[in-house]
Length: 141
Image 1 (tube, rainbow, N blue to C red):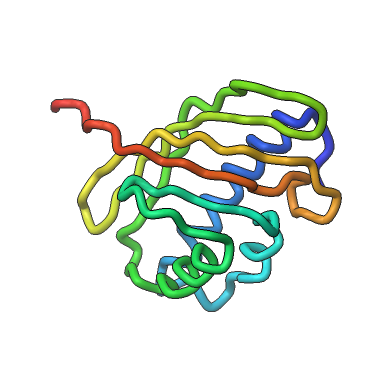
Image 2: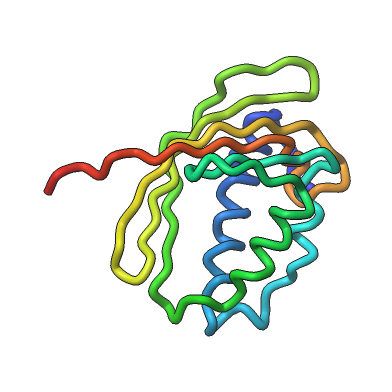
């Protein structure tokens, strides 16, 4: 488990979990990925609202991630930008960040807000409780 402030642990979790996605979704690296990490980072009441607006509970989110295993061949990347603390009280913190993806040459960006709570059993010391993502317009090039 990571040490440091609640924000430091949430930031480390966001970065590590998106690294997990890249490795899990890449056919070349998926076999070496420990999927249990995914299940250990979601709180029991976790829910997610992706940019489509559909509400996923913990079980549905894990099934979605599991089902996307090895769906890319080195043509999937994620960069995390602008992680900021927006609210903190006790063992809970709300952060926002931008997730920039490249999937098979197609770029997308999403603004995310995530609620974390401290957890001594989670890999980075926090569990995801809520995640909400919204599409961002791509900058004109």
